[in-house]
Amino acid sequence: MEIILLETLNKLGKAGEIVNVKDGYATNYLIPMKKALFANKKNREDLASKMSIINKNNEIKTEEAKTTQSKIDGQIIKISMEANDEGKLYGNVNQKQIVDAIYNDYSLELNADNLAIGQINVLGEHHIHVRLYDEITAHLKVEIVKKS
Image 1 (cartoon, rainbow, N blue to C red):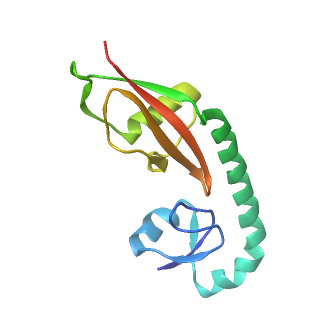
Image 2 (image 1 turned 90 degrees about the vertical axis):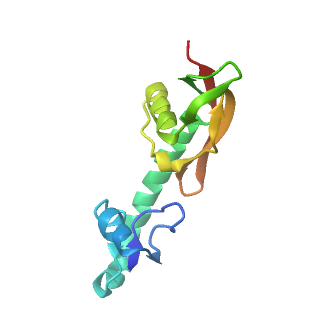
């Protein structure tokens, strides 16, 4: 299904572009969340007039992302986990745990899909990348400590 993006989305495209996505993704997520429009004849004709609104919204989201980046870039997030004597965790640290820790420390709501992490299953310091919006990313250190 062809859609018109109303905002820049990771791995899909930039605001104002017409892209192809799966029907379910468009009808169940992108369009209800007002992130896209159906690329029908009327919407395509109206695209030129809507570009100023789309660009303005894109600038707002870019500024919000830069503000978030300045708050969390280079910060250290501590998470306590159960681990054995060798430092191996009983389980893995997942994206939701990191997002919750960021919310608790900085009162920022992030989407777990924006975190680029590898498998974290040992104690210590781990580097993660947070894709905030378009090309704006933040880099965090997650310190996993043994729960007492």
